[in-house]
Image (cartoon, rainbow, N blue to C red):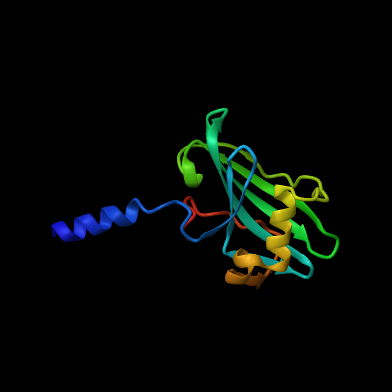
Length: 148
């Protein structure tokens, strides 16, 4: 019984990034992850990202964003944003923004450029992840933890 309890506690304390692929760190030190599952509708790909903030910003420690990438035109936008008080998309949901943002063309050597390259053209994250056809325009909500 004790062994079962120890194993259970170890599983619960595993890193929040399990099931996510680390993509890049920004100059501030925040770490960006992409979900292993990329949804695809024609040339547009959708994927959830998780940003672990190195230092809290206005009480937030992590942010989940649903990105949409137009892989032919080379542009990217945030479709939905969820801000959490804890690491790994845990803790209190501090704010949400369900409105799609505007399309941007990433600057060279930027975080957004690395994200669109991974989403559209591979790299370890996109190659390892399963691409699925999007059946409708409804947003996919993330689980409360990065593990699915």
